[in-house]
Image (tube, rainbow, N blue to C red):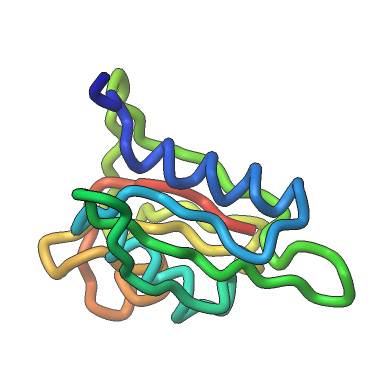
Length: 131
């Protein structure tokens, strides 16, 4: 069975893993997922990830991050969904919790956080928000 929203699946795996206090979660690999995980790692929301092989498929082992026993990610939500795509210009990118969180944006220059997209003056599809 094919996934209709692979990125939504990744975010749900991370959310569920942190709720269950797992050290790491495994997700199927894709280029978009790797780019999103790069942003999460750069911004300090996950410890990192490694690419692994599970049977015949590539997979990503995502190392979850906790601070004083609490998950580093309090809120992780998909914004642009397959049924309703959300696009934003560089000046209209949403701020999450007045700048305390990040928005992950798919731009022509790659997948970036909202701050990086503003610095490079590019907009794009608003993929997710993290706090």
